[in-house]
Image 1 (cartoon, rainbow, N blue to C red):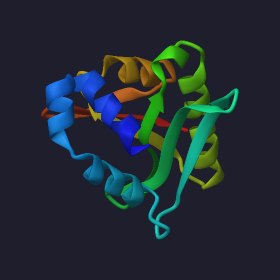
Image 2: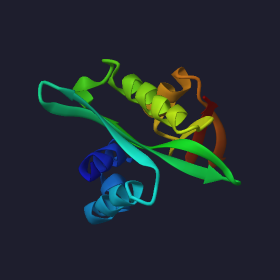
Image 3: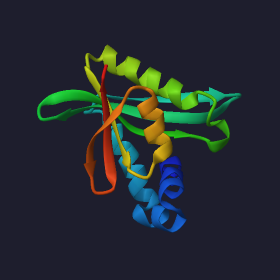
Length: 141
């Protein structure tokens, strides 16, 4: 997953900036952070013909004392995009969030990550916060 997080960074920010932003070791540690057993989190995979073609990590977060579900990372192999894989991951992640009693879902991404922004906006999310080069998209479940 850390390698795929790096792929996302290089795709969105460009090779030089994406690779310079975080080391692979830091990204690996970030995956472990997302999946810390003290957190309520889950990994969902989409597999086709024995190959994992997409994944998302969802977890419970809190802002101003209000819990919500967070899509903390999402990736689909380029050759499997536009085949409903990402949408299926969003739907499954939201099901998990509802099952945990969460009333809101969100994700954070670079303001230049137009593909992910379009994906989430197409699922009813709206940009509710912009900070520097990042956006926070959210919707009620």
